[in-house]
Amino acid sequence: MRRDIFTEDHEAFRQLAREYIEKEVVPRYPDWEKAGRMPREVFEKLGSLGLLGTAIPEEYGGGGVRDYRYNMVLQEESYRAQVTLSTVRTQIDVILPYFLEYANAEQRDRWFPGLANGTLLTAIGMTEPGTGSDLAGMRTTAVRDGDEYIINGGKTFITGGLLADLVIVCARTSTDPDNRRAGLTLIVVESGRPGFTKGRILDKMGCKVQDTVELHFDNVRVPVTNRLGEEGAAFSYLGHNLAQERITVATGSVAQAHAAIAATIDYVKERKVFGQAVAGFQNTKFELAAMSAEVEAAQAMLDRAVMELVENRLSAPDAARTKLFCTEVQARVVDRCLQLFGGYGYMMEYPIARLYTDARVARIYAGTSEVMKTIIAKDLGLR
Image 1 (cartoon, rainbow, N blue to C red):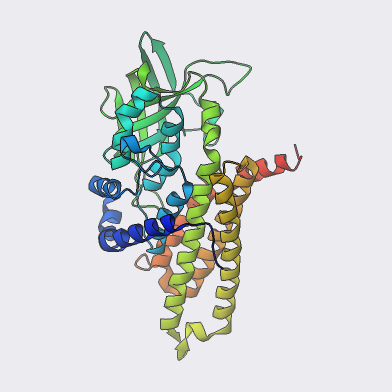
Image 2: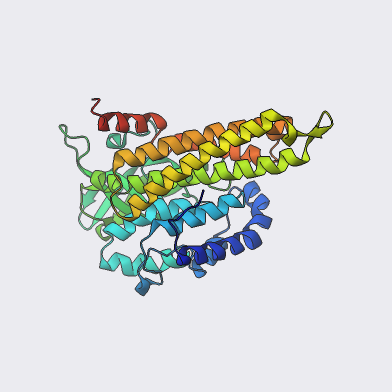
């Protein structure tokens, strides 16, 4: 179906991204998968092309336009080429909004130029062992000592933590027995501070180019000037960007579902069984037709949600509905596409296998499908 949410500027951005990805990323991608990360110089190249800093003010080297559609285009073009841009999505879609919203003037001068040009890489430390989606249950502490915080604790499942120069750490600065959400604070910790160590790289089922690590803090001293926003206000800050974070996951899910269908169509046209192309069987045609209709429905829902986000009126329940529907569609589509590949679909040399393993996490991170259903149920008055 025709999409009408993009302008000429977005399409020019798309062409720039497409050319770079096809020329510089696709040929090198297998090596990055083996290494488990994308080289730092690729982030810097993306930054020099203006692909990372569209939302950062112009005085810091950015584009000065806070418009999620540019982020959406970058995701769509990477998945169109059946690759990922490592932790770029996390950096510009999930983490950058915290800097944009809560960094003060001094912090902007210190960090924004590097965020725009790709020389400063970031991660965010929220999830802890045993807490999962229960953000109010965080136990990492930050105790005030004069002009410093002393941080102790650990984080897990930290995307991009290995290469990160700056990690936004959510830590407990006070405890209120009557309000578990109170007393959480965001503090930026630079890589290399004494007591701050990056643990093992976690061996994931999918998303192999996206490093995921554990972080440990043992009496790590960080200046109060590294605090983002007000002390004790982090829980409300975390909720501020959740809608975009969930739309980001939905964007990836729909783009990957499109990629799965495209790869499957190419395969079934070439693969022959019982003397004829797999594409010639009625089951193949019906399966792909049904999947195409389902993905188009997800795309329409997503595009509507994106415009609501751009216009700053996307509600939390609608973001949850979008993430739930799009990720569940992705799961069904990728599974059915792999079935059409037959035994070859189980081999990692075929793109559908990577799309299959990468897809599974979409129903878990940024809030599980069960959490999304809980949010939607409350919106329906079911409490």
